Length: 183
Image (cartoon, rainbow, N blue to C red; front, top):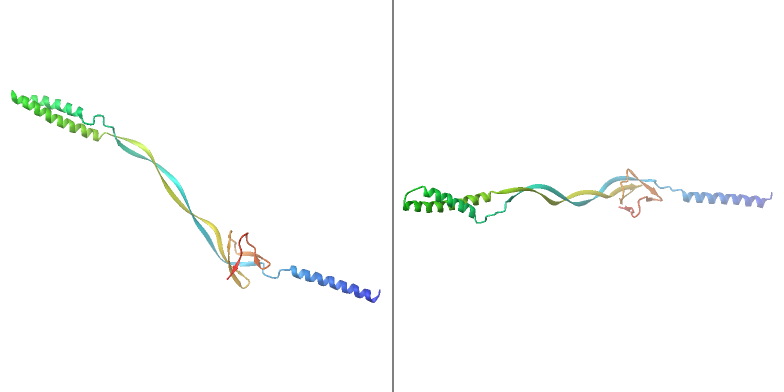
């Protein structure tokens, strides 16, 4: 083989080897593979949920009054009072006693019927409802403090990361829409 051919093969081999080494060097990630998690603070949101609460309660009602002016009690009381008054006295005194007994009996009968009607009640069961609001908390994300090499940063994440966060090409690997910010 001639010398120039050997030189060409040597230079070709050297350039292929050097090119492969350079290509491999650029593909190798020399930085840390993980960021250490220093602190995790859950972000909570209060949720208010209204709901209806019903209960059965006993309710007392006055019975409807059939004789609003207590005529029956007045008449019955007047008759009874008149009969009693008629038993007292003689002559014209009997008439006065009968009239006085009828008046007193009518008044008393009216009051007795009025008291009876006032205490005439019945009870029903009714359902009473009201709206109450329950409050609960829901975790909506996490504020995470991390250390990547000598840098300390904070990031908001959708999930709790655990003790480490993966790193690729010097950047945290997070869910879509989040990015790391250094301090």
